[in-house]
Length: 256
Ligand code: NAD
Image (cartoon, rainbow, N blue to C red; front, side, top):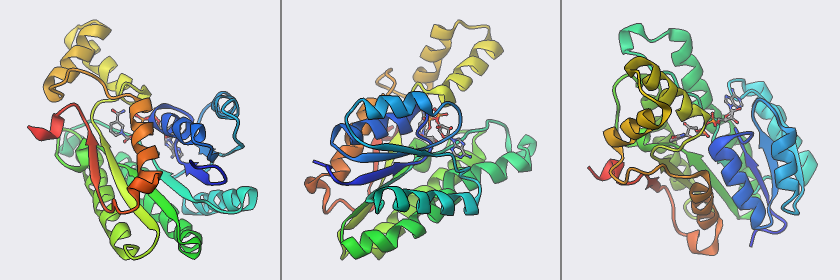
């Protein structure tokens, strides 16, 4: 379905981003990976799916590095057809204790990076009259949780940016939608499980159960594979007129 197309997925050396990159690669898209840590393992996993893969280590908090990454993607594969703004970080603390530096980093990486990559991706997508911009927001783009001020603010911002991107391109073949996962058991969430286990004297399994119990009626984690399939749907012909959606995959979290 996506043969000949190129997808750039930010923050795809791990977790949800890697899951989405693999799902798009399975549909034949060439992939540009980004993110910190080991890139060779993820690169090999994508290459094994029979598509071309490249990696750029841009720090998504830096505008100049995002610009270099977008140029690298265009130079390597000709054009970015699918942009998945996924890189994100979390910090948990009450507002009065929240380090200003963490606030700034979360807004930069979770929100501003999506704006910076989108503005650079749009001209080629519009020229081709086809493009898909998929922003990985969160249930926290739709509802709040205590002690997550910067994250919730950034993700509400991502949902807003998604709507405006969709509207500005509504008469073109370029769509923009957001994915709003509930709990997904990635390194980002495992840190929160570990903190809960330590604070409450729980085992890893007990802490995971407690985390789900607080928010997610299904008592199940959403998986990167499931989120990847939603991204594939947005890229399909059936997704042509899905514009500005903030689509949850959250086990009923935001239905409450
Ligand atoms: P993760 O920690 O497994 O992956 C985050 C990725 O972002 C990694 O590849 C990391 O290297 C990269 N990254 C972090 N800072 C970066 C930076 N400055 N520049 C470039 N790359 C950077 O986390 P995840 O859970 O897979 O999260 C991916 C996205 O999904 C995030 O936007 C997160 O907010 C969102 N999300 C996660 C959950 C969840 O339950 N895990 C739920 C809802 C939304």
